Length: 125
Image (tube, rainbow, N blue to C red; front, side):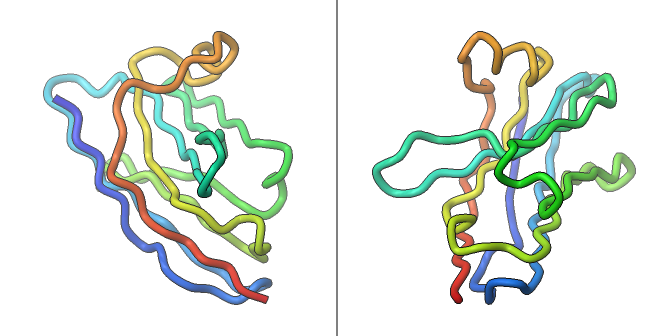
């Protein structure tokens, strides 16, 4: 069983900072790749960043240089540091996990299997 719980969302001014957390619990051995996605009303869920189990990190072009993914294995927590967010970074942010590499399933246009409930981020100018 995989459980993902996001926290840290809220309202932030453009140019400010915010850190999202995803606390995960996984039965058995944790060989899951993990990622952040986001969604705004009327749009499909979009990839933000991933931390593959092999250590590879990737970002959507729109967030490179502003959002940073990291993890604390001891705390079973994935983070997304948002620095200098823009209004178009607003949305519901979801933590996701899959036994396949996120970069692999993205290439197949497949979404990860496991999801958290999401946390709302609103960036205002």
